[in-house]
Length: 185
View (tube, rainbow, N blue to C red):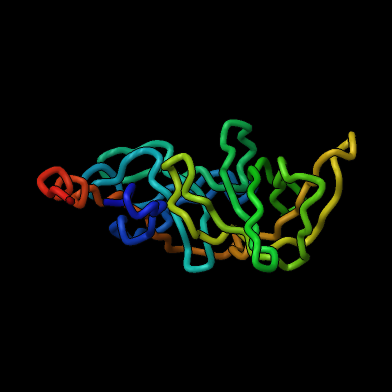
């Protein structure tokens, strides 16, 4: 049915599990440990959010706790597909790094018109993060070393120094089982 309607992942397909932060890496802002784990149905790669937006993903679990790698961590393997709403257009790129309290987005064509203060959200591509989770707002635009594409600076809307509670998005796959038994003509 989703394929027929051409829908991306939506937050409706997720159950929400609230958790308390029990440990923070305050010096590097790379990891937190939360008080929910395998006994609560938490699995590796589940997205973790605050009301202001995406903060990271679960990278390991134990029975009663989970470790979350924050988007502020220095990990070159974590590239997130994002889109920037600029006027009536969406412009797609990859979130690729964090430094000086800003995210960096690469892969934006030089011929695109991007406005400062545009909101950046996840695309839902790659099946890891659902579409529409806020990342931040555009605060700077520059070109790469060859003047071929833009490098976009994005200020997170999340204050990574000031949170004690998080929400884990637990994938609800019950709708997939329902689709196996339904036939659409």
